[in-house]
Amino acid sequence: MENITIGELEAAFDRGAAGELHVQLRGKSTSRDAGKELAPLFDRALAAARAEQLAVTLHFERLEYFNSSTIAALVQFIRAAQDRGVPLTVRYDAAQKWQALSFDALKRALRPPQGTAPMVVFAADDG
Image (cartoon, rainbow, N blue to C red; front, side, top):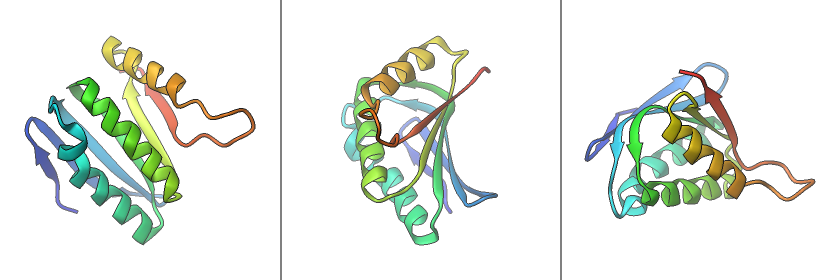
């Protein structure tokens, strides 16, 4: 798959082993309308995952910054993946304080009701 560049954000797509599509994010996501700007990236990931029955892993470890608009777009993507039955993992760098705080808050906000399966797996890497 071809990589996508959106402003200062780069997304590299890689089909890994074991039926996974890895989306490596680098740079910064600063758009005030991240939902609209990131839609092509998220749509491409979901379309490929559904067509080839792949799980998606979003890699934020090398991302330098994202704003609150990006978090809102990510929540929409997580819900879209769940609606389409696409397994999703979000990997982040817990050694970067801003990432640890952002993803810990996101995990709490997206905690599934008791007795239901989680819609996303959050995986922290320590640098």
